[in-house]
Image (cartoon, rainbow, N blue to C red; front, side, top):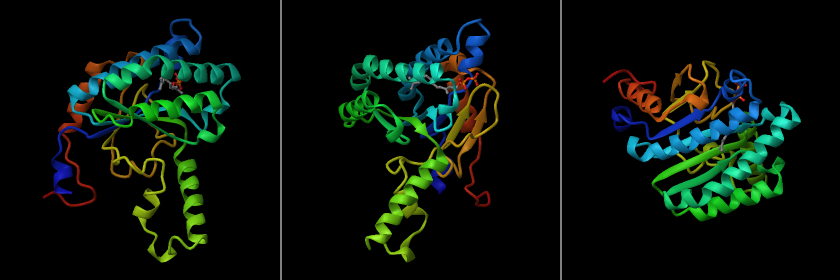
Length: 240
Ligand code: FPP
């Protein structure tokens, strides 16, 4: 605990990349234009992580609720994810980025899942930055899926219900290999969690910035991180 509260750079930053649609609409363009600009920003922010000392970056690309958008926007986003993975994989490998996906893959199309599996496999030995992309992800859905798997193991006699504690449940979550986020950033002026990393963010700091995601630069990212470094984190304890 002591070590954690003295850390000045957040080890794990999670970002809700909001505001692509409004950014595009302000320019008289379709919403997908904003998502493409948002994807370019993803690259800049990921590339800035080693210099800024961020070891884990988790980004919210598509939520379990995003299926409710128009069919055109959903299929445009899916195409964008595929294109992004096809065009960026080589660079991700050479830049030492380890890519993982969290979320339910069952509802995603086969071609996309195959690309996700491929990039995970090709980058799994990297450890300069750990990039986790939340795709068809919802915090409640993740806890429900984890509970289902845990229940199966209880029913099969592999887990004693008396031994189940928070660490047990955490080990069944999609994020089981990741540390909890230290800082969650949401862009575009909305101050909501929107079902993102509900369990994992129990002690995270939150930072809400007005900038729309396609305008969120590396410099602004750096300034949000330096604001974090001035805060004292107590994890429920009294100040020492
Ligand atoms: C929220 O903005 C953004 C999304 C639902 C999609 C996020 C996707 C990207 C940034 C594209 C690239 C991602 C990867 C991993 C390549 P919004 O559409 O809700 O904006 P609005 O609130 O202004 O309508």
